[in-house]
Length: 314
Image 1 (cartoon, rainbow, N blue to C red):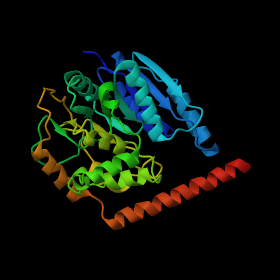
Image 2: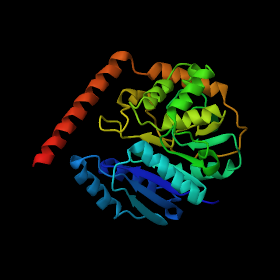
Image 3: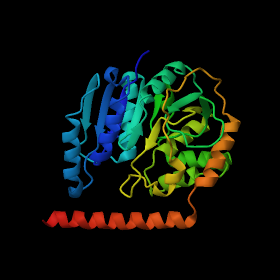
Image 4: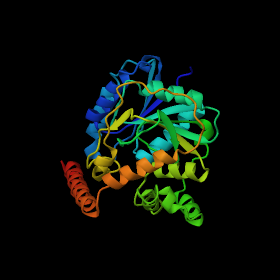
């Protein structure tokens, strides 16, 4: 089996990045895998020290076949960092496993991702492999396909990534022309369209909604494990995209055993779709909860801006 390179995207939260790397090191295939770490540049003077601390930590990391640290002098932002980094790796190595620096991983994560990448490498309708799945209740297959995408630990191939459309306005216009916004939003259960609208108007730099839309408009599918192999541990006001209100939605108990990867027909499983929609209905935050965390985010950003202004004068 040809092992895919791992692309890890980090910024300034050493505590979370350390947990992600430690979990990755516990994977059986880690010692045989190449790790490429993309370290984004600081946004401000306030962040320079934390970015430096991150890079000092990264230089001491071992446990992989090869480690390459790509340090950026300027801040690209999470979206551009991931888009350019994934493009670079797939052009060089044909496939890639993608991680951000706030994920906990099952010891069986790399095994599942590599086996699935190999098994579906020539299946044109499959866009990506996702390592995270909701903590739903109900009978779930060992593996299955959904049109929906999860960015918490995923993988893709050059053949699929070549269809990624960066222009959010173009994607939004096409979805609206086809009148499939409700279906794109998992029957109205999750605001993917709203995220895409915010990105297309410059209010967000979200990349995952654009990748999901690019895949959706091609009628492509994403493979999921029946038990999550990833847990999102970085939910906090300083996250690049604040998903704190959705903590209950994404909460999982990671699998304590490997996922059996056997080829299944690339079709969306309607039973799983229904289970996911019911889970979203039960766990999605209400308007009051979202407003509270939006206010919390505002005060965090204001405090950070004040610290950055002060640091320039000291």
